[in-house]
Length: 389
Image (tube, rainbow, N blue to C red; front, side):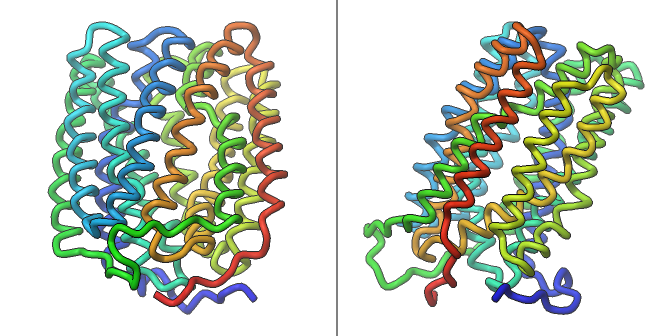
């Protein structure tokens, strides 16, 4: 039976959820001040695909490593602060880049920071939250993350409208980035995930269903190319540059509004059916992208695709938390993030190449990969309860 949601659950969430959510809000405000402007600096779909794929490939190895080491050493908080600090430094460096290669290197540094923090942060959130509220906790965390992704583009739009150059707007990202590091240091001070009965150096294997979830995630991720391609396509269809950050806001605002309800739904009916719905919606959205005749209709589908993220972002992590031993959560979340990252290189390079042939082929191919991943996800068995911590 699915766990029920307690009355007014958001008021009962642990302080760690709200504190780390605030860190993500500030970090994404910095990131999405920069992200919608990168296509203007790079200028081609292939360069965009190379940048996103290379950055995420490097970060994927870091994610897998950081989660395992944090589990062994029980120093998850240090990884969190270091990861946010590296990302805060990398973003404003883009303003100094003069070649596509330099932008790729700065983006890779940024994603490496994400790799260091992602698994350990999710392990802290899981440890701090009762099992019956984990979908909601991850949903609220993603909600605040996505609210930051609303604030960032609005800042970019305001600064561009005020006459600042693209590079000066990007340099401004150092302000929310530095604030994020300060809040992260406060949020994780003294946080140590309790040691379990195994020795620190022991390795707890992932369950078969957890491994199958990783396989399904990898297949789905082959169709999950970077959202910057959607911004690039909007520009191709005629959307003026100053409105590109506003288009980005519509997606991020939709995510933020749906993350907490999606997480609460995962707590009520189970994370797997919610994740299945999420991935199916993604496939439908990419079919619609393939046939959108102009930027108005494309923008509408872009905004509606927030349903996929709102349903799935909390459910995917809540499902992994149910499938793994509590002693291996950092490693499991690190692997989950790593699979997404590793698949982005082939996904982005393939999408970038196919877009140059015909955008419709690229979007339909992405929809096909998403559907195949959805079918694989149906093969996971009913998830078990956590073993006692």
